[in-house]
Amino acid sequence: LDVSALDLVLTDEAGATTWAAVLAVSPPSISLRKADGTLAANSRNITVECLRAGVARVQVRGTAGNYASLLYAPVTVECLPGLQFSRRDLGTLSAPDGSTTVLLTPTDIPDERVTVVITSSPPGIVEHPPRAFL
Picture 1 (tube, rainbow, N blue to C red):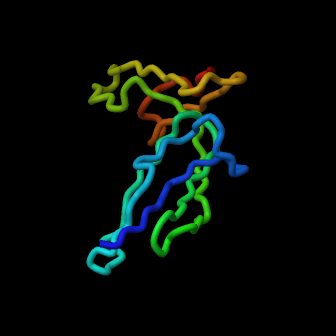
Picture 2 (picture 1 turned 60 degrees about the vertical axis):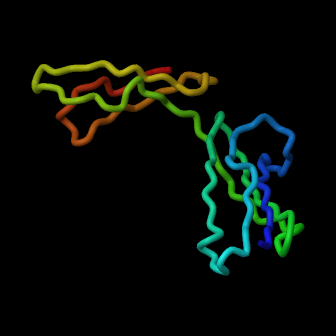
Picture 3 (picture 1 turned 180 degrees about the horizontal axis):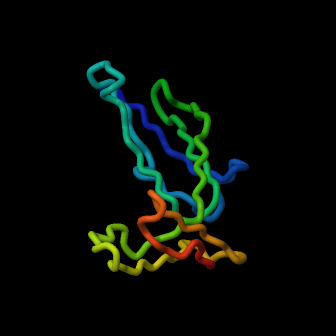
């Protein structure tokens, strides 16, 4: 089988590779094979995971075969600071007196006061505070 290897390269917006990681990509490289002569046989999934807030680029670099020395246009990924809920499924509550509490935690330490606007859909069914401050 003829094999062409592709490396996945992570860089910052300026193209530097020596920086604190914003993303993790798995697997770090993939192999394309001549296989049965179809493109579908060479489709590969990669997983991109945000490690912290920031902007990074995922770029593919060919290392062998007819892909050798090719550097493809990067895909920019922006990882935003997030909010984690202590639980996503709140179950079934009885109306009109059912209630529950959910803990909301930021994934990054805010660098200034942050207002989180809380809404529900459709309006008027769930009562909640309109804002939370972090």
